[in-house]
Image 1: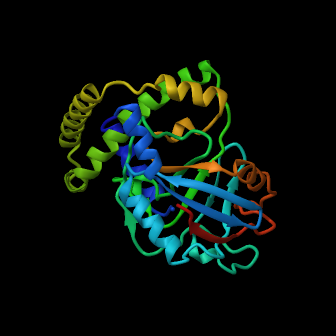
Image 2: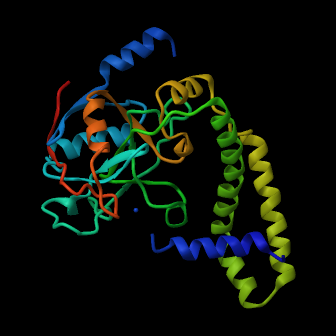
Image 3: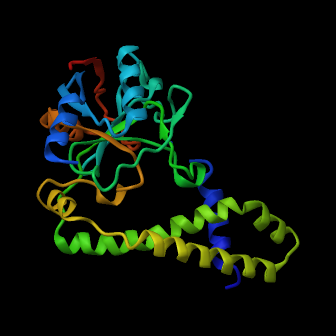
Length: 280
């Protein structure tokens, strides 16, 4: 089919546009990491914030100190996946209200520290809008999720690795199409199929150059060990910013994860954040 890839990109964009050092140095960094106590109606959770994601760390600290999260619900809970909170619209929300679109009115530039930080069980990550509406993968200013996930076998991870390697190319191609959208639309308006085919070939060649520089997607030994023995969400790696992790209270996270939910994944019985405080 002529200009098939570009056509698929345009269709996807339309559909989604309506969519939310040394060991001593390591110890020193760990000692300096900020910890936050999250008091919830299901129990207490303690998290630490990574220094290598300073924009996310500083923003989270500011929101905690401003009591932004007090009274906010865990509005989205999916078993074997994650628990999500941070929508200010969830405060005092009525039953049946659709939640998940609220925030402080700004986003945060992505801070991927991959593969050092990945989506293992207990990881703290920032929610964001989909790629089509958010090609730079900027994070929500307030919404976050804690990974629960599931355990994987080596065969599972091998198959997922191949899938993510393929998706890596698709993501690059979509970004290139977005950067050349004006040219694509002009060629479409002029019914210039030859021009579209030529542009597509150029973008595919550019995509392959980038892929060659980046190398194939591959989980490292630490990731494989964590995903097999602890669990997590490996399909989210290098796509959402991981900026911290749970250091105490995963049983409480598990209790939240087990809550009964409605068709929008909102717990039928509200689970809220009572307060957060810096405990370092």
